[in-house]
Length: 514
Image 1 (cartoon, one colour):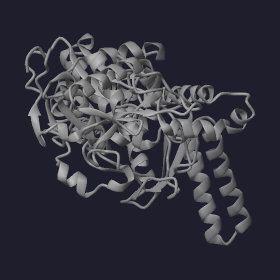
Image 2 (cartoon, one colour):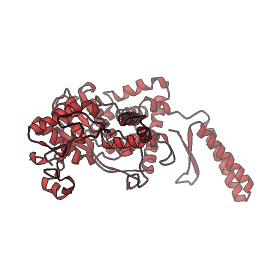
Image 3 (cartoon, one colour):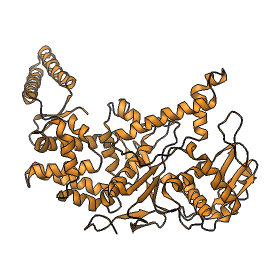
Image 4 (cartoon, helix red, strand yellow):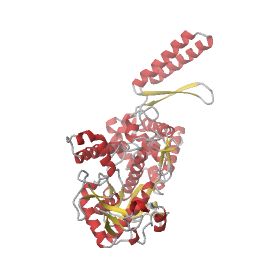
């Protein structure tokens, strides 16, 4: 693996194209290039959209660590031309459009701007770095028209019924990514619906627009591009005809990524579009496929800002950790239980970091402290994390490493301060924490132990009153205990009651409300 950090054993990635793990060898180590399909901005991003944003952000961070921050180019597009966007604009602004107070194009602009802004806010809260470039489809219409013209000239596309279609039979290697051959596509297609196609698998490159719909002038009439051509043009514009990594969700393998390859290879005369194709697994919610009809459609915004999932708001760092607890290629069951587990783990790790590293420092210094921890060549545990992560982003193994470090801190097996420092560096490197997350953590507030002890004594008195049959005193004491809980909650301290598994005695733990 040339030009990566000295001593590094190598990065291996599972390539969907070959169905195998492969050593990653960049085309140009001085400019490692990655393209990931971004959002279609017609609605708030859901939890399924969060997964590729987080997964490929981790890969981006790893590549930057290995090759240098200025030697990695990450492109994530925004699709702002789509019939779903048109439908959303009509739904949201139909009366204004009908009354002539707003054009459809203006309504579309409002929808796309609002949704794109919300997406940026959401993924930022999830700890994702901004990509190097974030092109919008509407900025590259001219390039799409040029590529479509090239495909027609080279015999890979044709006009029919007001559309320009890609001729899949013109590309013998079509289906190489999804492992579908042309006969399988024909067998599964409804030929009668698209009888103007040469082959049922042919797909739209350009389609006509009505006078009301968004459209651009072209040699084939006023119209708009098909979905797949957008990514072929935007990736070529920023990364070249062949680049290193193309990523996205498993659902994009076919038809989207298959069709991207067909367009790009046939337009450029290459046998590849990207050398490595990475795909993250599906996300289901509470054991079921996510859908609005099932009532389990969960947006990132709702998780961050409302109590509709699990009765509370969830911080972005908890959502990120919950996603990373499962290997990126495996399916995830996104559940309240998973979030509670992630929250408990992170709360424990942050408490250890606060106790052993941050407690003697001002919050104004946290940014510098975190930066030093995650960029320290002497952080041996971070080096181990990088090696582990370099085996096809094996995040669950890094999580296991963090658990082991946390246990060692608790047992005092090694220097707690050194381990907590290393742990902080790993969590920062993974994008799970930043200085703001650290500032939200507190050491135990003065007097908290005494207030918890007072509450436990009151609860014991309530139990004694109950045993003696004094219901009035019991209610009085439980009310006093509840007031202490409520007062602490107002101060940002959450109490959790439980029992010691060995003694059976009542115990109360606390955490900072996040």
